[in-house]
Length: 312
Ligand code: NAP
Image (cartoon, rainbow, N blue to C red; front, side, top):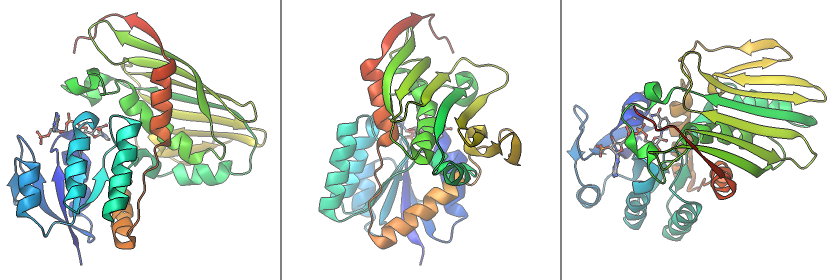
């Protein structure tokens, strides 16, 4: 039987990905939306989350699609009301609040899922399998996109807690932490912060690797023209390039699978919702915070470099 779910925060990602993924899945029935401004045709809508929880005891699961800073209060209320919770990435504004949510969920006996959509990109699991057992020499992340194109009007990205360029950058780190067999940690970070913003528009990060491989990431929100969501890896046994955010893969220069430009995210959200259905039915918890720990460390170690104001 389909699980009844409520979607809260009806913005870009809810409309682009969550609503179509739920509609296409036999696991789910979109039973309510919660939004301060929007509604979805044919679906009961509420403008207050607490009122929805009180009015709809039939809804077992909530999926939270608002930006990270306001998300904690919604998740806490849902857990307190005995509902399973699915969190957009990043799962919260701080590591501590995510740990607190996990503890609350375990105490309440409900499932909580910190989703990382980029880990579900088409070629990520193939890359992970290829990399297993190989000796890493270098890994370079290049994540460069045009913020005006992909995040129009999203002022929250420039406010404290909105992560700036780490909002997409954390997707790269979610792939890196999924496919690398060994743990890495941040050793240096440069944060380029527009004079009129609280969060970085670009960042360079260096990581330490247990066997001395060179690992680095370059994130930039100012890229016009060609967009790059690439992870280039060399090992003693060959090289691998994941591109299109993990949707395309080449091994030793031979393309294994290519996805049309702009088709990134295809299949990612259906897989997230399939994971959530399994988690709820099994009574599980999935709160991997590794990508977020790297971002937090990049802020702690970050050298702040002021750059020209960002005018959208
Ligand atoms: P968005 O369109 O700017 O915002 C989503 C919705 O969140 C808004 O429409 C609003 O919904 C609600 N919201 C905003 N501020 C709020 C507040 N202070 N309190 C309560 N609700 C608030 O952002 P988005 O692009 O959908 O991103 C939302 C999350 O999804 C972010 O964590 C982002 O990293 C993640 N994500 C985004 C993308 C993407 O391509 N955009 C891709 C993957 C993941 P209501 O008006 O309905 O209340």
